[in-house]
Every structure is written in structure tokens, then in C-alpha cells.
Image 1 (cartoon, rainbow, N blue to C red):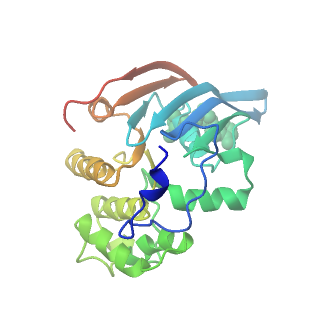
Image 2 (spheres, rainbow, N blue to C red; image 1 turned 90 degrees about the horizontal axis):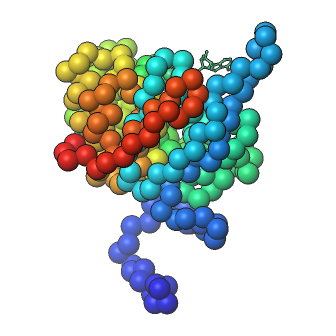
Length: 258
Ligand SMILES: Nc1ncnc2c1ncn2[C@@H]1O[C@H](COP(=O)(O)OP(=O)(O)O)[C@@H](O)[C@H]1O
Ligand SMILES: [Mg+2]
């Protein structure tokens, strides 16, 4: 649009550092693009192929469930999307930026600004309070008002009274709430969740999933969720089934209700 340069207004919220330009040859609506990703590792018998030609793209706010048996490659795929592991070949683009065309420092910086990660085992730092755990990604992304933003997000997940608690005195469900607050507090473009309810009882898991979908909706995050739970997978727009490192099935529909 020719008049778009005049559309910014003073009240517009700026989410942080100066906007980095989106490369011209990428589709701006594709927040996650996984392109022909292969991953092999050397093992005692030669080469073990973990991922074979994984290829899909997700638009802003889209939710995708990655399902598949244990050992099928789901966690490896998530690590590659986060830029924590490298593909043997293929590329991953986050918000148009090729993750593996930049160096590790730039990748860490991009991850800090764009990606939230939630794990099955919570992965909170035991020597930090709930508040300090949630402040950490804000500090890594050099965002101002870390303490206030972290406190607000902990209140949002129902832990306003637990700011000074250490992880070991929190229940599993509470720890995962802290982890959700930590993941969402930077308002990431992408949230990656690896079996986030896998360590929780059914009822607590349901509460956590509900909260995750709510935050996803509120913040307009693109969600990639690894889950064994078919009911949870059904709540996502897309389901991508992986068998022995290959996409065996991919279906999409917009869930009637979340
Ligand atoms: N660094 C590695 N070295 C060797 N094998 C690995 C490595 N990482 C993962 N694997 C193997 O790759 C397969 C997929 O692992 P993973 O991605 O964790 O599967 P999932 O999350 O679906 O259970 C498994 O067989 C696992 O043992
Ligand atoms: Mg796994």
C-alpha cells in the first residue's frame, strides 16, 4: 500500500528493539517455515537418520500439533526449529529469517526475541525464584521493566502470590505455569512446546493446556505443540504426524472450539 508509511501513530506499542527488515523474498505471513529438513547423526553402525525431508509452514497465530510415537523425531524437530540443534540439510525460517544463515550469537538473539519454549520437565532454574525465572528471558532480550512485566505475567497465570517462591516448593502444575509465564513474557512470535502436560496428572494438564491456548490467542503466537494426546492435538489447526522421522500424515482444519 502506497500510504502505509503514514500509518504508524505515536500511540503504537513498540515491542522492543528497532524492527529488523523482513527479507524481500519471504512470505511475511509465514512465521515458521521448515524447508526440506534432514537430520542424521553418526552412530556405531554408520549413520542414523533421525529426520527425513520435513517440510511445512505455519502462518501467524496458527497452531500445529506434532504427533508420533516415542523416538519418531519430534523433540529433535522442535530443537531444530528453535535453532538449538542444526539440520544436516534444509532450512528453517522464523519470521522470514533463515536461522542457519546467521551465526550462533545472532541465532541466540533471534531466539531470545522470537521464541518461547515449554518443556515436559519445566526446566526452571532451581536457584531462582518464580519471578527471577520469568525475568530472565526479558533480561536476555534487553527489555526494560523486566520485574514488572514478569510480575504481571505471573499474575496472569494465577501465581501473583508466588513471586518469591523457589521451584522446589511449587507443585508440578505451578511450575509449568511459571514456565508458561517465562515462555510468553517476551511475547514471542513462536511458542514451541514439547509434551508440556507429560509430567502432569490429567486435570492439571487440562488446566495448563487451556491456559496455553488462551495465552496463544491473547498474544497472537504461532504454536508448535508436541503431544501424545489426540484430544489436545484436535484442538490445533493442523496435525502433523511423524513416523520414523518422516511426515506420514498432515491434516488441517480450524477447530470449532478451543
Ligand atoms: N544426538 C543424538 N545422537 C544419536 N541419536 C539421537 C540423538 N538425538 C536423538 N537421537 C535419536 O533420534 C530418535 C528421535 O529422537 P527424539 O527426537 O527425541 O524423538 P521423540 O521426541 O519423538 O521421542 C531416537 O531414536 C533417538 O534415540
Ligand atoms: Mg521427545
